[in-house]
Image 1 (cartoon, rainbow, N blue to C red):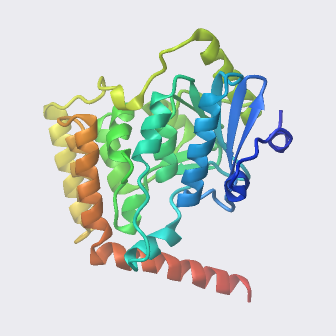
Image 2 (tube, helix red, strand yellow):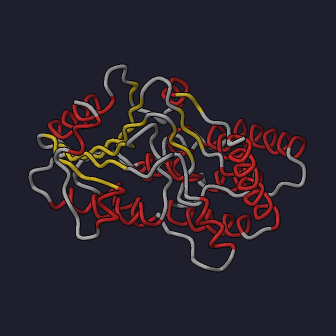
Image 3 (cartoon, one colour):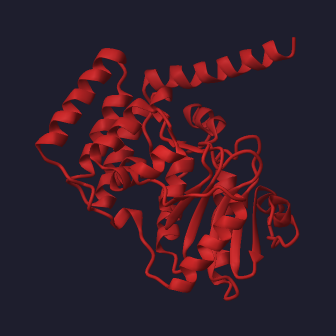
Length: 309
């Protein structure tokens, strides 16, 4: 089964934009939700709305027993739509809230599998972590690179990631922003399986097997076994803070990311998310983040201009 098969059995929705951005197709009892927002399937507010519509439709359809979330084209979801960040900074819109959608994903009575190729970064990884299972091809990568823009994960990334990889690894990933290739992500606990065949077909088979086995299906937010916090973790976080202060002088976001992840060990999930959002807002509306976000767009424009010469 190939990605082109997805267009043959798409369900249409009342809003044509939604059906263009995200599609739901039934593959013999497995609903495949495909994000199609090229070039990198950025998680815009329209994409989020379309994802919600497809998820609800898949849950209501008695002919669908499991769901697969996959990216069309060259990647999974490679992050948030930064154009909307500019609009927020300009006072033209408010930030999208992913938490209700991610909670609905985790609470689904049907198993949801995130099938990852290319990159699952930022909001893309936060969406994947709300799925019950994550599989990827060997050269895929995952990460939380938000600090490179002067912000921290804002959709539960600092709370779900340490529940999968532990406090110290989660803090490193959120503070330093370096992505993990699929083999390292599997070893760390982010992925459940690496597949070497055709991703969509393997994901459908994986999801069908989970549905046949029956629930309940694992919720990342309910996992607490890796939220260990003792003297070793205290020392490791102190060393990480020292590294950040030395290598990223005067940057607030990396230290805020560490604080948010550390709080996952002591706060209930929902409270940890509220704390994360408070720290996110402090970073997002800071001069540091505004400068880094505008610098990102300036560099991208310069790259485009140089490419046309």
